[in-house]
Image (cartoon, rainbow, N blue to C red):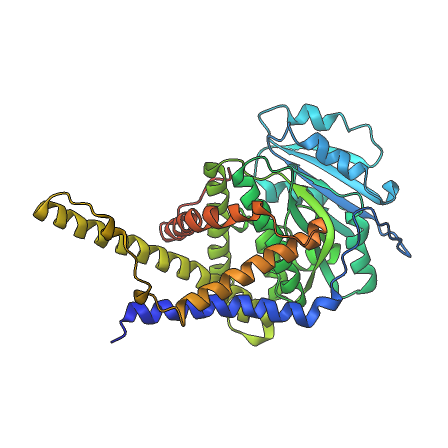
Length: 416
């Protein structure tokens, strides 16, 4: 007789397969629409709109110089770019670094009391004089062709209200960062598919560009549970503003180099997803809000529940196993035989479970490889991709559960 836990397990496996297959089908339906130009391939616009890019800084003295230099090196008329450098109450030498750029005609430098990233962005909005606005995190650098490619989307379609770039891991140095590199490559693929579905739920800090109209009509950035880039995307989706993804506009970002820093970052992200979804729960499953409400948010919720449930089952089963071994040890003492290591495949349902697991892993690897093709112009499998599976299989359940725990207790996670 099938137990309730088995039923729940197979339902969750079904949803996991469904999500990956859904993305796979979306890819094949839209693959001819994916344009990936070479890194140095230049394009020209019929008109170059003025764009303001705000760089919010908090204790970024080691990275912000390269960030600003990358903006000055953009293949875009510099007299059409306004750069705001906002020191959000840093306690290191950030102010001294950004103040070196104060003499540039298209750069303005601001200092304010620490209030959080969203307040630094809003300071930029208060001084905005252009029709387009964007942000570039102070730990990221842009590819020279990124902005012109993003602006090309606005030129082709006046209904587009925001365009997000492809965010790539910059110069990974250890297995934690290589795992994130594979994840970010997969994220490029998934973001493009969500763009086709009209279901993007995050407009990332590294160089997403908005029409000024978005903020004129919807208001400035909000705290958004320390995920203001997610909250503004939710708000745009609720008001049915079109968000696109430019897959060959590359932005390189520094990622957490240690498990501890990665854990804190992801707890914040998961907490932000859960609480922004709670804030916008009135859009869930309502068809008028499109795939954002009927696919992206529900699948995100199911993913969190699935990982938490399966992780709990693993811990429970491991506990039962260890308990039974302790009982045996107390009863007959220590005994070891090579026969005890024998494994009988009879106890695995290879006709269903193993097949489904194979399908999931195949589609995940496909997503990573195709994302790598879009970002690195390489289609071959890389051994570095293998870091993704142990890191995110073992550690991810902990930050998912912590995000749920913090939500239940209304405990806000730290920024770093």
